[in-house]
Every structure is written in C-alpha cells, then in structure tokens.
Image 1 (cartoon, rainbow, N blue to C red):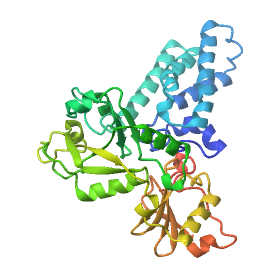
Image 2 (image 1 turned 45 degrees about the vertical axis):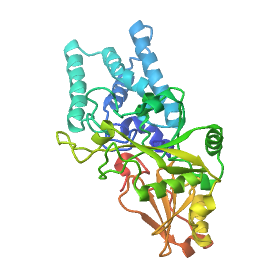
Image 3 (image 1 turned 180 degrees about the horizontal axis):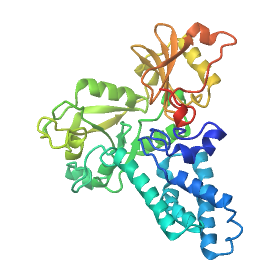
Image 4 (image 1 turned 90 degrees about the horizontal axis):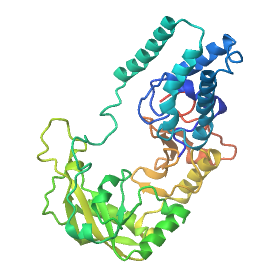
Amino acid sequence: MIRFMPDTWLEALARPIAMAVPDGSVYVETLAPDFRFVFALALALALALAGLGWRYRAQPAARRALALAAFCAATFVPWLATSGNGRYFMPTLFVVGPLCVALLHQLPFGRGLKLGLLGFMVAAQGFLLTQVEPWNSWGLAPWKAGPAFAVDVPADLRERPATYVTLSSISYSLVAPRFHPESRWVSLASLQVLSGETADVRRVRLLLEASPVVHVMFPSLAGAVVASGDKVPLADQSDAIDLVLGEHGLRLERDRCRLLPSAGLTAVGAKPGQPLEGQERGFWVCAAAKVPRAIEAARPRASPQAEAALDRIEQLCPRMFPPGTAGTSVLPVGARRFYVASDMRLYALNDGRVAYKYMRALNAVVVGTREEVLAEGFRMDCKIQGRAGLPWEREI
C-alpha cells in the first residue's frame, strides 16, 4: 500500500517538515501534526552553525547524541521505502523527543536559556494536542471495561475449530479469541478474484478447500434492530454476500444462520451517553456450503470498450492504478475498479466519461471520454489531486 509513501525525492526529504503540518494522510490517516522533527532539525542546524560538531565529538554525551541523531535519520530510509505509515515508525517516534533534549544540551547556551527552549518545545507540542486531540477520534467504540469487544459466542463455536470467513474491511479481530483457539480466519474484503489467481487468492482457495467446516461471519446491518432469536439475515444482504462467496466456491446456508449479539458492535457509531435500546447489533454466523466457483454467472460484465478504457488508464499511470490488481465491478452508474494499494477508484461511466476518485477527495476527476482515452496520443496527469505533492501543495 502506497498511501503514505512519497512520490518524489523532494517529498521524501521534506517528510520531517511535512509531519508538522496539520493535515491528514501525511503519515497517518488522521490529523497528527508533530513538531519534534522540526525541532530536531533546527537544533542540529544550530549546532552545525556554531561549529560544535567536531569540538565536542569526543565527549561521551555528544557521541550519544550523535548516535541517536544518526539512528533517527537512518530509520527514515527503510520506513519511507516500505510504507511511510506512522504505526510502523514507533521506535523513532519514541526517541525523537529525547533526541531534541540531547541536541539542546550540546548547545553553548546557559542553563536558563536551555530550560526556556525546552519549555517552549514542550508547550508547542502540548498546544498541538489541545488543537488536534488524538483521544476518542480513531476507535470504533469506547473501551471502558472488559471484554475488549463483547460478543456472545455459543458453546459449540468455542469448543470446535472451524474456518471463519469475514467480508468487511474492518476485521473485528478482537472477537477471534472468543472462538476455538485452533480456528482459522480469512478475510475476503480485499481479494480481487476477477483480476486473476494471484498468490493471495491461491492461498485462500487452498485453505477453503482443505477446511472441513467453514462459517461466514459478518455484522448485521446498522439500523436493522436485531434480537437474539433471529435466525435469518436480511435477504438483500444475503444475496450480496453470495455474490462475493460465489467467486470462492462458497454460498450461505441460510437455514443454518444464527445471530451472536454483540455489545461491542452495538456501541459502534452510538452517541456517547445515549441509550442503546433500538440500536442492538450483532454478528451473523452462517454455515457455508461448497459449490463450484461461479464467477462468470455471479457478476455482470462490463463492455469491451469500458474495459479497454480502464486498461489504458492503468498503462498511463501504473503507480496509481497497478495493472492486474483490480477486478472490474459493474455498478448502476458504470464499470469500476478499486485499487486497494493506492486508495483509488477508476470509473468508466455509462454516459461515456472516464474518471477516477481518490479516497480523500470529495468528487471524482474526469479525464476524458472513452473515445478520447482510447485515442492515439492521449495523455493524462498522474498527479492525483489531494494526494500528490507536499501537504501545503495539495488540492482536494
């Protein structure tokens, strides 16, 4: 996934500064500005201008500060090359604060000035926390008391192993420990079977073929009040799920479904302090029957011209629209491909237009008609609005 990976050398070199900008999707999904790397760069520059690097390098404290600075600088390289995602940068995020203190200690200032600068840095970082509070902004539900994500699991599911297939992009993996410890779990949310049998698709197929017992687990729909005695999911929901399962040689056994009430799932989206009566939700667990794979029959097909237009955009901008990684879905408005790795959607609309939409953008961007896209000499700008460039250059 290239969500946080820089597109240019300039973006890579400017990442420590970009992390201080109050904008989302810089190095995490949410707004999480961080001044500490800017402070570290400023202190290192001050040391260089003062000519203190060579003078104090023999001192143990200076050597430790230099080693810590080298560690922080070096970790940016593999981090940006692999993900650029802040959750995989935690060791450096933990030590950059002490690095600022170590660099400040090496400056030829009096104790009072050093303490004043240290207080300023702490106050500035604290100010960011008051303006962009990280608490209660990311979790799906409040976690006030155990268990972590409450769900009522019947005894037979706790005592017998099985393979559980999930379908939503949110894994709800906190419920897994409540089932038999030898159970296996697999999500079909991001598998693109229509794009060909990739390595991931092949592994999932082999797992399902080798599993004697397969259950499908999915959350009940929001707004549909459920009771613990409910036995059958909504027909429309079941039909949509069977379309996805058919690509993997499965279908729901609708007469073998049961609802697992979940206080954790009910709390998702609930307003704090509001009563939950009438908002009860749970997880459906349905036995899955193995059937011949029905990809061709399960999904309608896009027109050859629409497929060709989508293929052309993939050829022009392979970084944003990686060829062979997204299957084509037919929607009421036209054909669509969803590229999980780049958070991009590409459309060949029924009215003839070809457009793309970035995850963070409000509207789709039209690149031309199908005829224009397929014409010889067609070119498009692969700099995606809302994603390309440094945070202060982006457009939504």
